[in-house]
Length: 400
Image 1 (tube, helix red, strand yellow):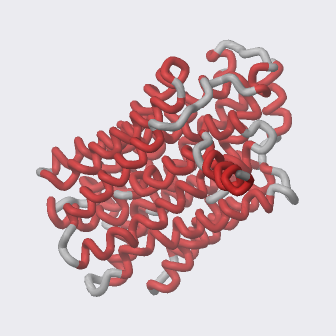
Image 2: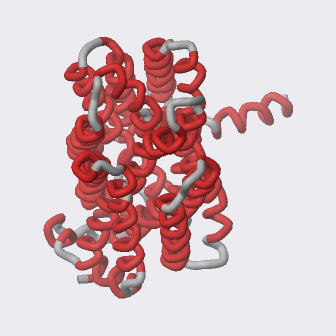
Image 3: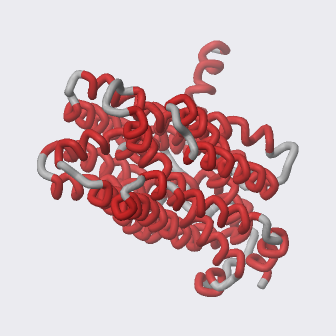
């Protein structure tokens, strides 16, 4: 009997809401970065310029903005589980139909799984932050570690299919995997949103009043610029590496994986770093590392330097998103869910705009390197914002 109960405990722990949020974030990571490695193949199939290719990023993340709005409306009514499962179903449908037809159908498919991303990402992040009030940054960092596992795996999963000319089967297999995860999550019990002990002990301010605080305005800019920067880098690295490498070989396909491997490594280590330095100082140091990597990338003349630079940029950016979500949760307490819907909408809008801006700039200037100066400027802006007085900003958001 004792041995049976010993086996049942870890099984139960694997079916907690936090654990299944991690499970949902692996395919979410794959879907988020999917356009990066597959875009050169799709561009060749549909004869796309950089500006036209950038429209796919715009479609994905503009649709994701709609998903974020829906997530903020649906979570209080349907709960976290229903919204996460619905998001995964949208992802499966969009990914599965992407290779089926013309450029316009492909863009509609990308928009479809973009809605799924918008539903799932804020729901999972806010769920984990709410369930771990004493260690929000560490918990959200570990959640985004799972997202990064999917992001790192995506180019490596795609490469063998591409080598064999089996691009369409790759999308069908991925869609089936996402659908399987959705069905498994549907069988797990979730707590109702907004019922954590820490949240219920604090009063909630009107949404408009919270959005007018200085910390809310700064967070909105950070969400827009950070997610836009990350998606611009992940989306265009493969194309940038391919042009430097020429047409020979396929190593350029895996370059985004080194970027996401950097994210993966630092998100795994972030809880350790947070025991020694504050969240704000960790973000400041990380932004400095990201800037160093970007400057090196834009001056690179070999594939080896591009790969190393991509990893360094990932290392630098890794902690920014978890720290920003932790600031959102700690600043607004029980109102973080409502404010979060606006912040995640800004994040999706940034993800739509910045990769598209890189493509448009690249086409007009005839240089993808010039286009990638846009995320460089974004990193400089974020570094400046993280050097503001955050302690005062957080206090004002809660007490004003």
